[in-house]
Length: 216
Image (cartoon, rainbow, N blue to C red; front, top):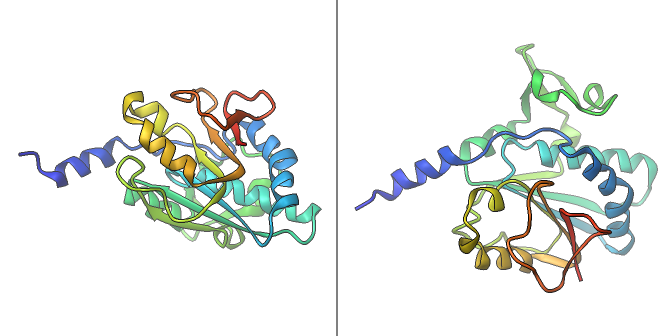
């Protein structure tokens, strides 16, 4: 009989830790200029976002930075709450610490690094500013075996995790459960080089995008 602890360990070894801050730069421009303002216009007290398969947290931090910049332009914004989950507890722990190697900050938009990151005490790594950490809750979660976290999300990021590393015939029920957690008119974002595993009624491409969808 296969030891379930060994299987769990293998699954964690296969999880993906590689990501970048502001990966797919055009996505972050669309978020800042179109998607977030649209959600703000209709949303009340809170905006809830799920970063699924968050790896070391660059995506969640990029969203927090985008929100901080937006706050400089707009007043009276609702509260942003980001849930960042990953199957690997080591990744979630490192993401929670907010500590990154210097080379992981390469390619960040001009002026961002010096405002939102500072040298850690060891002088080798860089720490995310506390103003970013306040938005994010980090949790361990297995997309393939667990129901989506409780709540309704206005944005769900699912980039380069589910569709890239699992067979399409394994995804149907998992994918539909995830979409049940997406708010009406909410946005579902996959990797720029990925495709949905099958057509989803009520999920439409956002302004012709191949990787940004809106629930109608």
